[in-house]
Amino acid sequence: MVEKTITAKFLQPEIYSRLLRLIENDRVGSAYLFTGPRGCGKEALAIEFAGLVNGGLSDLRIQDRFRKLNHENLKLVFPLSAPKDSKTDDPLKHLKTSEMEWIEQAFIAKTRDPFHKIEFPGATRIILASIRELRKSLVLKSLTGGTKVVLVFDAHLLSLGGGTSANALLKILEEPPPDTVFVLVTDHKYELLPTILSRCQHIDFPPLEDRIIRELIHSENLEPDYEETIIRLARGDAHLARSLVRESPEEIETILKEVLTPLLKQNADQWRRFVDRYAQLARNDFPTFRFHFYLLRVWLNSQDLSRHGLRETALFRNLSTVLNDRYPQADFMRLDACIQELLSGPLQNLYMPLSLFNFIVTFQHVLQGKQPA
Image (cartoon, rainbow, N blue to C red):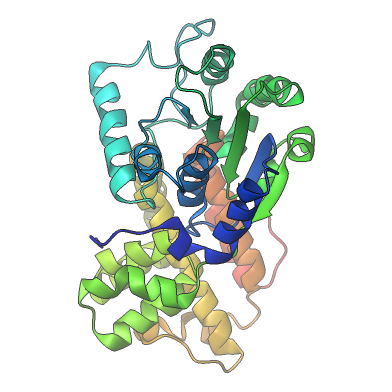
């Protein structure tokens, strides 16, 4: 991918300036919610903000340590697998050596690329042990002074597992320790408890501008027309843009055909193979699972534009009339909602074979303009 340094100021200059003014005017609050669409640079800004709060603007060595995720005042919380002993207060103690090595490599990757997602294999929620350990660490006085900054990535996953983690964090937010700032980062703001939302100052991020997406993928030596196609399809999502870059147009078409064929036909064998394949992907390779269905969402959007006489992308030319000719009553908004619901299934520990089967049935009903079964 891109080797150049990607700065938070470059990604979201207006929000960066807003955060800087808070610091300069000594108006930093105790809790913030960074929210917005996927791939808009929220995590990068959260890490940058942590360094700036601790004097990183005047001391570049401090800022560099925060960017490398190795400053003692930085506390990072993210989804992990739950320990067998629910009473343990150390979220890392139960992990295998290979899992600890995975976390170490994920942190290294994050320091090199602010868009790298720390997605621990099999983790579906922020566990209670992480919040318990956080409470313990916040009581201890910092040896270097400054402000402790707690970053909670994928904060909406606090609410899963009965919401015990969310309630535990809420107790800390209600009586925040001195010299501590919390930054909750999420794509799904309203999956958080209303009481947590009310404790945070909200900073809403817009999608990245096309010029920024262009800069992020420009060194990939793409054909100009294909580069512009990716920029248009990504719609400000750096993750999606990079996923599209990794695949050739032929590979993207192949993926779409594999996803679409069972959804457009009444064939039990194809349905079974579809369910088996994507249930396994959801369990073992969620990023690939997510990309395939994000690609389906992008294609549906292209179909919707085509229906309204707007320019469609050449990337999907061979599949350009599948829906609009055969299913003129298809409701694209409801189809998109079906996909979003399916994508939330693995994170909620749903039984994915059943979810995928229900998805096929619902998708076909909506294609025909019927109410979901």
